[in-house]
Amino acid sequence: MKRQKLHLKAPDNWVNDPNGFIYYKGYYHLFYQYFPYAPRWGTMHWGHAVSKDLVSWEHKGLALYPTLKEDRNGCFSGSAVEDGGKMYLVYTGVRYEAVNPDDPHLCLDDQFEASQLMISSENGLTFDNENGKEVIIPALQDPEIGDRTHTRDPKVWKGRNGWMLILGSTVHGKYGEALLYHSTDLHNWKYLNKVSKGPRYGWMWECPDYFETEGGGVFLVSAMGFSKNNENEKNHAICFRAALRQEDGQMELSDDYQFLDYGMDLYAPQTTPDAEGRRTMIAWVRMPKVTEEGWIGMFCSPRVVEIKRGHIYFRLHPEIRKAYSRKITDAGEASENGYMARFSLENGESVDIGGYVIKREDNRLITDRTAVFPNFEGAHLKSETPELKEGCRLEVLVDKNLIEIFVNDGEYVVSSAVYGLKNRFIHRIQGSVELYTSES
Ligand code: FRU
Image 1 (cartoon, rainbow, N blue to C red):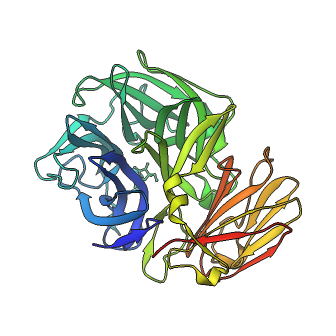
Image 2 (tube, helix red, strand yellow):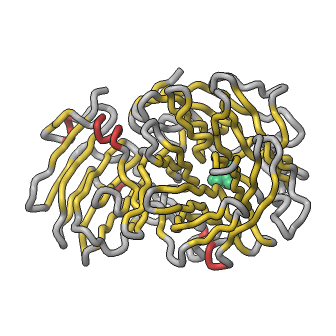
Image 3 (cartoon, rainbow, N blue to C red):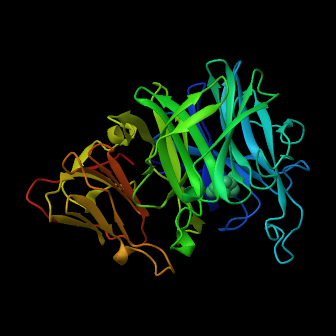
């Protein structure tokens, strides 16, 4: 099976959301939304990759595929938990009520029904798709709770008093909401409560995730229709500080939000505690165009999520930093896994990484990918962080199709998909630049 290092990418064809991210029996498992037949979205399967260290990954092929009436048109996103040594995958099954007459892999006019399903595995490697699936939350029938069609992406975790589950949904197609459920056995679920922020935050919430860190709770969500001004990039992943009362599922969200990543390419994040208990996040990097090798869709480097002084940080996972350990003097010496550049920028200074420009201006970090991005209608080329509070120390990971900039150890992150990057590094700065690559 295909192996990849440092950045996990589609093994072939198409991937979108990360699913079922978990550290289980000494391995990280990352499942993902996968269309195995062509490099475009279609009937969803779950692909599967495993890693010992979050650095080297091995693709394991298909884990889930449609076999039941309830998931016959797709196994949509979901999560994983461990209980009594078994791995449980909880996901959304989709059944089209009208198929697109021109394409059996697409629905007609959003006429579909969504149910929540579960499957277990003794070893995290084999899944009995034929006989092992169970519907745990049937398609919703009460529109006052949530939508029969647009309710999906169950995230399950072990709460203080039993299992908790959070689902994305919409209030009558007008604004996004998340639904909270409780269970004592993973099989029987009771609806507890819902949380929403009104119409300013998109019409539907996908892939909700809630977790607690030392500095407080965090709620991540992918809001559909969040931005009104750009047809092709309406959906965005955002995060809030949050507090959840587990007894009745009541959740409070902060007034202010942050983008998950200011490159605006990341979507559908998922988190899990790593081997040391650090809250680790991975997200899908959206790409506009199939690569020369025939695949599309990849995942960002794992990031550790923390709250400090009311701000949500996304720090580069220490295992990734450790992997870029071989010092080089020129970007041309980098291994096939790319390189890491470490430097600081003063206001007005800039660097050019193979055609991708990073600049500090008015104490913000500004990027421009115009020279390394296909001419794609509506796609943004420039990105900008909010004003920086702590100087401008950068760690930049450079891979063939992805640049990730960690500003001030995760105060902000800017990640951008790129195409046709040149193997060079031009700096117009005073201070030094350190370059590192990994062993291949
Ligand atoms: C987010 C999403 C999820 C859904 C999946 C389908 O990108 O739309 O809500 O489960 O992708 O592939």
